[in-house]
Image (cartoon, rainbow, N blue to C red; front, side, top):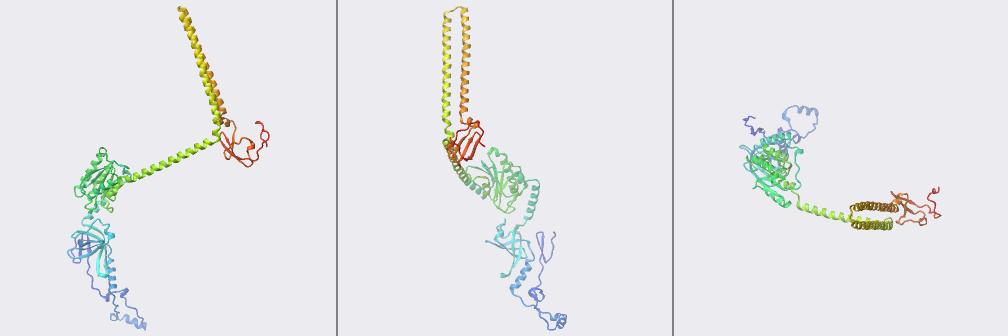
Length: 514
């Protein structure tokens, strides 16, 4: 915009702020509100009407107003100008909870105030002699008759172009998918080592190291010293990210932190460069970025796999809390012991309950009886086999003796044939005997199974128990109205006794009474 040479105009950056000289206050020219004269009813409307049109000589003089009322008028006039952006030089800066200073140029000055709620969010702290652009609302403070600017934002002169570059690069990278959450890597749960890319002399590194020692002293920290401010910072940071990512497997690095402390937009600009964003985008190793204060958002933080508000928060996002892990392990150990003790107790009670049950106690005698019979059969089988073998051995010995007494070849051949025959008969007899004994053993096993309670129940029989588990052996043991439980092969049936009949036992083949 061309500069306008005008005695009543001042050129501020690319904006023209008009300064219009104000006519001195004249109460006679004021109209409306407090300046309206009181209305007095005329005794004769016709006379009043003619008087009102007679000219200015009869105009009413407005009443005077107080200083407070005049101050309110001035305040409304000043605040009606709305929010402004004003460029100038800072002077008389007072750094307290609220910031008080003066903004001036070579012809004028303006008192300014920035309340604590606003300056807490500011990334720039004004200093005397600093050229700044202030955004704020003009107002007039009546108690001191002071016109001032209530500042909401402070920018360095020249930051506007940087902000524009920042926004343009953000749009480009967003369109190219640099900020997509789907492409970002998850952070490791338990990293072996972490690379910290920052200035070795900065306070951010000390915050990282202190937090890492407290949370997980067993994790290795690799510090990569790079400049974090200036023209050489962005290429150095990009090279460091590429180098760490390239040697991550060799060095055992599972994640990296890129961090620095707070500063102005110019101080943090290295982290807004495209070369740094490309390096983070290429990296396959997870990157956590913590740049400046929480209110600062740089491009590297938008591209990184995770953004942290502070260097300490970046470490906490990556490293597990060793004390918390120990407490969690102890809790799980105690919980596991409790569950194991409870399960063992439940199983012990179940075993004891089954051991006391009648159905599990009575079959033992039957099983023991048939086991003894089976053992006797096995013993007889072994004895018979040994006797047959001994008998055959004796016959074989006799044949050998006779063979020794008769050397001729014919008798030798005959004896050999008899020997082979005896051997075949021996094997046949042994197989037959073993087969007979095996059949006897199978029969005994079948008989044992038939006598067992399971087979008996499977054939249609049942066991009837009282509610306390006592076996009901006779109809006389049942009482009218008594709840009973009949155990069948595939389950149980609960019923109630109507009337027990202790008469002569009916035939198993008689139909039940109607």
